[in-house]
Length: 497
Image (cartoon, rainbow, N blue to C red):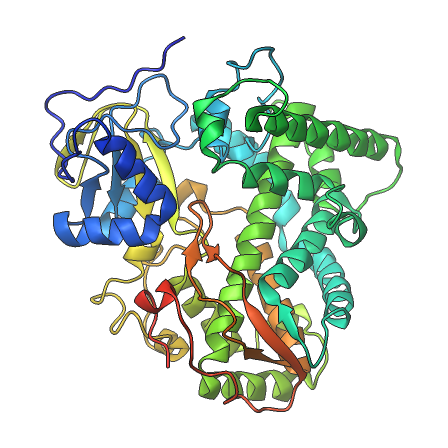
């Protein structure tokens, strides 16, 4: 079947005129290379609703047979329209083009479950699935996850090399991988299997790392040696290992305190239906990505920002020590740390770990004064919305104290999305980030080491392209060390010494 990319002649959303022959491909490539930087230029030139290419006929990720155009939007009103019109703006899986290509390999292999979850269902089905999943994230359940977070964080902090330079982006990724696998699957398999690629979580990560390979799109063939073949092998490995875990849990007795066990038990109050094995596979995969990679990047950006703002770091440590006295926080104590809360909120605002909120129009609609045909890709920029000076004065400044006086609504500040698709794990993520920072910063001082430029990278998530090198010291309050000397395009996004 041939995929059609069409746009009606009346498509009027402004955008850059494509060059002959390669124009639209060049626009897509520029977005893939630097989505934040490229669209910032487009917004500055064309306004808060802009097409990837004038006249449309582009596609970035939509699995639909037809995709008339790709548009980018920002600002509270457009965010509100996109996130609250549940029947107009549909969500699709993280796997994007590979999900669309799932039936086009030389021999068919299943891709229907991988990283689909809540991202692969819409309308009433989405609301029902979300209702079934909600008990796994009630406050009582969060309390059971908190003790595991503390234990794993303490063990991971012991593995940091004091007095030496550590790659902290990798360290945060390994820590959140362990927490995710323990909370989701009930085993701390990330501790031993993460480096070897043997855990389901690491398998998902390896598959996601292949999403950006051009050969994945150009040659979706299940032939040895091609990226598509390796991708399918990773998917098969993930689903096989997850089925083994599900089978083992079905044979176990007792109420195991992990998300997968909880999801296996829930029933719909009206129909009595349980989640199927396929639905479990999809939901847990999506939860892993949302609860691992995004949290790791949020932590990485936060410790970087604190390393460049010694006065804020000193005030934060004062608050932590006055309340916790060097100990891990309890859930009650987390509510007594307002500066920690504001530091995290400001970090999520200024360096959004997830810069985009993607949708596809399920029916013709109007947005920002323009008509959008059914099938139009709409990517809302969380980052650009969080940079609006009328909402956030001096938006490039890292200023946690601004949150003492401002109270933006869910459409002006939405690091976890908004509306019916508000991230179901938002409470889990905030608790995790707070616990890790509270334990890490009381124990160690992290000194930035300018070994590589700090450049942004990624589309689904935003991470430091070259990692984050930091010298780890026992906490000695010498916060002035390592301030400045930051190179890279992050300086376009935040004011730094």
